[in-house]
Image (tube, rainbow, N blue to C red; front, top):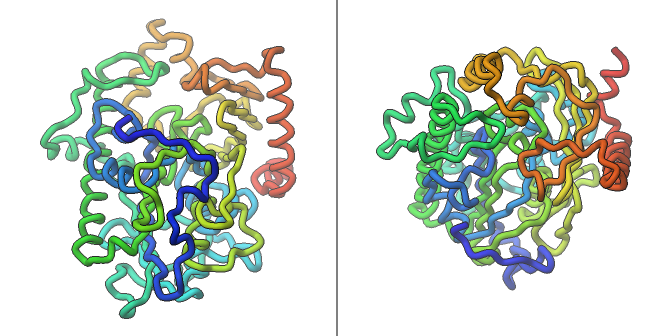
Length: 439
């Protein structure tokens, strides 16, 4: 890893002496969302990829190693981030089921920021994607922070879509790259066959990440050129995990584990690495806290910075409808163990039509399977059924291929995580599971 590791006794120690911004110096906040990426960045220790701008952002701020979104696809994940509430609580858990009305009193964080005097901007020269299941017009004040009043603090949400699977693929990105990633030098997860098609597809994903990194550099340079970088908090994340098999759409770590880097000059120490468990709804709460907004009681997230910072021992995530495939899955993850509950085990690992059409590896993997050339771990990608419960020791098994749900040695851990899951489902009045039972 390219940044010196430093552990923390408590999150508030991240802050320098100037913990609470005064009314006249409330920071601007730029929230950059790269689409469909996990932690395949040089600053996270991933080989073969060059990400100098994101790496530099991490050197100037704090890199978080255990950040997770609440859903493995963009719509439900963004619904949760925009409200600070689990998507299963607000009935926004499905991928693009439009027309949802938020519960009375629940507001998008942009409305709360606007009420507090912030100018809210969407896109700022890049993607204006929101991809929400609910309407809350006007969600943002405008399309660029330059349109704010003189002296007015701003919140900007910027999406960088280049790492999302394009209909035409990433061929043009690779053709334009001055140093395309060499497929022979990439490290594939062990559940992918070592095959030229798989290596090429992974290399092109890294090409897209390098292109995204250059766009991050453009945004950071603009802040410097406008002389507002010193009073701007920059947050960099992925909106959900990487768009590869066993990633996006699934609750294995490649689907929900995302990068999180925060830079806040003068307030946040530089070069920090934090291993605490963080949910993306905690970032929503943190933004409100730093902006001086009174935190609504309904929030499921909590600040990770400031005097009211809290830690969490585990995170929750959920998957429901993705395009035409309904597959109810829930998980709870600690720093060591992951428990997954499959409510539709009969579905196996069936991917929706869009995914099948946009995963070049899939055809190759099916062909290798027919030839009897897949390892046991690689065959998991094509399994016709799923176990009802899955339990993984992430320290011993980071690729989540050795299911311990039937292990007598891990019975106590299984029961503990089962109980946490049951309590979470009950507390959130899980709309996805309630609808499943009513069908």
